[in-house]
Image (cartoon, rainbow, N blue to C red):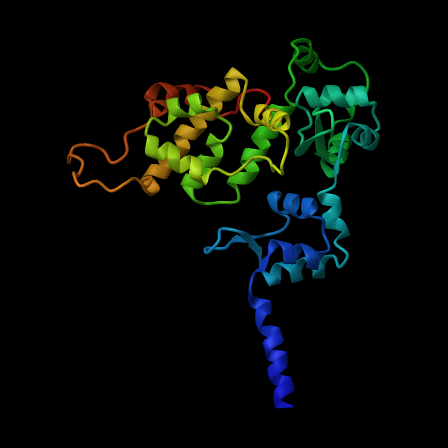
Length: 301
């Protein structure tokens, strides 16, 4: 009896330890893509392992999800993604109308992939499309509103811009560290833009080290990587300016939290020199611009 009791104790002991993502996926019976999206959207709570930096899931979180929905059908539906054809069917509109709504920024993609022709295929949350159709019936039929026509007539396509904005927002929610948040914001700026905002090379190197990938890369061809890189970087002047100011504000907070690491030097800095020189983008001119904009994102974001 004592041996059996000891054996049961040994089996029960690991239940309090956080699970690796692969183990949590196995126990929940999810696909990797479903799990990753559920974590990103905040449907599955995770923590970061201090030893290896990997995300882990508490045993209590797995039990909570199973208790709420043993077959996880609700969770799967919340992370179900669809393309243009299936999305238009869910909304009861034509694919052409769906494309207009997407390009004009009324519905926002949550992810994308490249097909065999290296064309971008945008994916949307089925749950959000259904909610949009229920809440905005006037946009589904009849003549498009003037605002939509103006965007489309100008040849704009806001899908990539809106995806970037959404991706940044979701990623920054996963960390409370100001430097990690600044690194996330920096990931949509090209090296020239980044250097103009962050003139300290040690700060730039620290941001690059902390920066997460906005998209998963698994052995894509050089052409595919180039196509993905174009989607990741901000390309509209209004969007670029907004992201520069957003990064500058994040840097202000990060510098107050702690300085970026830098090599030790035998000669200390003069007492009158600041530990971290302010980046050009934190000037009063840009702050005034932000106040004039009422802290609202540029159109389409």
